[in-house]
Length: 81
Image (cartoon, rainbow, N blue to C red; front, top):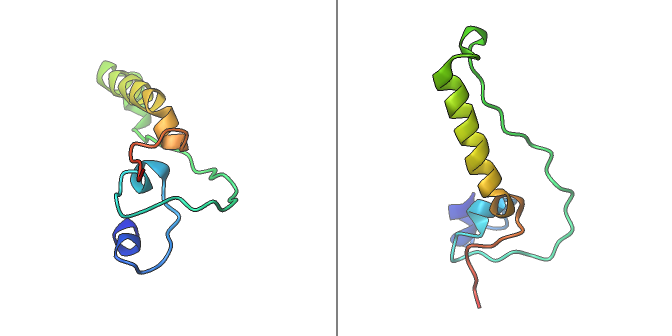
């Protein structure tokens, strides 16, 4: 969708961390309801307590927390100004 919008094929509702990093796109001042999408990490119930699965889960949480503003759209990595 991002590539289509960059090439003039219309508008696209994109996650901020994708749209903000595309130099050919700009945010529109349109009031949209916030997305209620979540992030799911699935694993087998028997692996849930293994050290490697816990370590991976903790790492993912840390990365996502550190990128919260970019993911939520409060921080833009690209500026057209």
